Length: 244
Image (cartoon, rainbow, N blue to C red; front, top):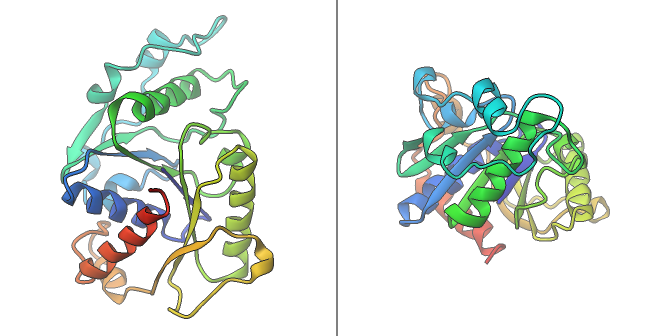
């Protein structure tokens, strides 16, 4: 499952809430940070020295497995890298990749070839639940970076700019063959519905502005352990129902 949206709409927070909910249900969960902002670790409450080094910065591993010039191995061995490059946090596994923009077909970038191979390996061999926090915006979708996932959660605020980005993300994902999509409206009133002409995915859930999150973010980057835990769990259940 991939989580996408315009920057600042809360997609990383939702990715963490989904992962945390699934982990507390006893599921095998992998969270993958594929955003250049690298905010998934802090949102889980990790300090900088607790966050794995992004895979895109592992130059020696990239050269060893893929090569950096001439012939590039587009199908590198990655099964042993998953455990080496990840960390456990609150019953989940965190893998920090960095941006995977450009990892679609035809890309000659060594780092991105390894990144996509890691994603495919996780999807096909390692886990029941894989949640990928994507780069903000639409560029990564235009280059085919989510071609292997089986569901897309688009996060948007109830604003024209945010909804327009969400609509474009949905369109590009559909062009890639990813039809299983759900829209989550963040910081939205309970009775709000986006305009029909925007061609958005079906609304799975609405999350109001959480004053407790705003207050908590003043002293920690973590989005966990909020007093609205029961409501957030119900929200996660609604979102996951779209992909069963």
